[in-house]
Amino acid sequence: MPKRISHWIDGKPWAGVSERTGEVFDPAAGVVAGRVDFAAQSEVDEAVAAAARAFPAWRDTSLAGRSKVLFAFRELLNEHKDELAAIITAEHGKVLDDAGGEVQRALENVEFACGVPALLKGGFSENASTRVDVYSMRQPLGVVGVISPFNFPAMVPLWFVPNAIACGNTVVLKPSEKDPSAANFVAELWARAGLPDGVLNVLHGDKVAVDGLLTHPTVRGISFVGSTPIARYVYETGTSNGKRVQALGGAKNHMVVLPDADLDLAADAAVSAGFGSAGERCMAVSVVVAVDPVGDELVDKIKSRMANLHVGDGRRPGCEMGPLVTGAHRDRVTSYVDAGVAAGATLVVDGRGHEIDGSDAGFWLGPTLFDHVEPPMSVYTDEIFGPVLSVVRSGSYESAVSLVNDNPYGNGVALFTNDGGAARRFQNEIEVGMVGVNVPIPVPVGYYSFGGWKSSLFGDTHAYGPDGLHFFTRTKVVTSRWLDPSHGGVNLGFPRND
Ligand code: NAD
Image (tube, rainbow, N blue to C red; front, side, top):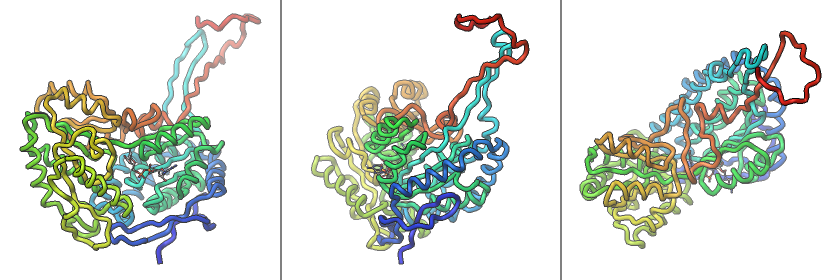
């Protein structure tokens, strides 16, 4: 019997039954492993009401009280990281070690939020005017919504939830319907850490649940991560309903290899960042830009490394790359392989024939490499989100930079070189939010913030770290006079500071 996955509202599993449900797969076995409830508007209202009820007491909980819960959650998450990784692998398909890496990076975001008493300090100016003091404070927004994608079912929710909660907000999390169980496990850990009922609620579902949050008058802010068309829609709908919105979108990440680069290092990086998590990462490298004359040698080195990749069920020892998340997604990615061949790109490695260490019914596609890809081809223009790596040949540093800057996405980019001057010039000129120099997946550490440019992010605030605190708080500035409150009588002039 497939298991049923339902909402977590007001500190406990939801008692009702949704009218609509969706299938959750075990992608390595290719079978339906569960059914997830799809919230109706009434269920959205219930979750938001629970968060609204919890808000007044949580916002008034001292910083010491809030950070105590965060520290306790950090310990529980660390203690249960292997269990959480197994839940991720079962529904997403990424190999266990990769799922463990996701949880480890999530821990960084929790650890950052544990420092909330120091991080939320405001400013104070004594005697800004004579015997007048001015000070600022940061206050929570209220109920906020977090809407997350399938590819990091634990880490992306934990980019937002710890900061939102640390700042005194209450949260309704709408995780991806494709791998919903990780969010429920995490919510239980929060409850065990002492988080009061209603401060974090998990609402499962599809567009109905998302639209319910985007238009709900009680919801004050929305943090979204997903594909660019939905990110744009969420940003436009949320802001037109008066909400603060940050909406992180899709990506097409380039890795530029200059002629002086260490080509073995670059080939290792291209394979790791291109095929890790089967390419289902928003920071995956999907285009290698080989600057003349390194193309032939680099393609040979990438090809030889791909032959040894162990693809299979992520629960089996030694597997390096798992299946794609659903059969429909695998078919969509495979259609890009067909389209690349039809458009005239050189298919160097055809992943459709790769040996698989797993069930025949799984949603497999092996690592695939195209060379001589041209910018108009769909393998170049579209975010494929699968194990398909394209090599574009470039005549010069300048044309490589133009290619990256002309691309509508601007999430991550990497440069491989041994020339510090070239690297400095690149980081200055490139129109991308996160840059790696000899580092292929430059995901910023938890005390910086994560965000792309152009069509990879709508809104002006990046995720987690200092930007996260900014997003989840409103600033209030107080001007006060206590000593000598006498004044010179009625004065209709604009107040001057002297
Ligand atoms: P998606 O856009 O299909 O779904 C994201 C969320 O939006 C899910 O919770 C989903 O239920 C909801 N959703 C889907 N269709 C909707 C609709 N029509 N109306 C309202 N809500 C809808 O994305 P996905 O396939 O789950 O995730 C992969 C995408 O996420 C890729 O494009 C990837 O690049 C992107 N991503 C970006 C980042 C980043 O930081 N920029 C991080 C991770 C993933």
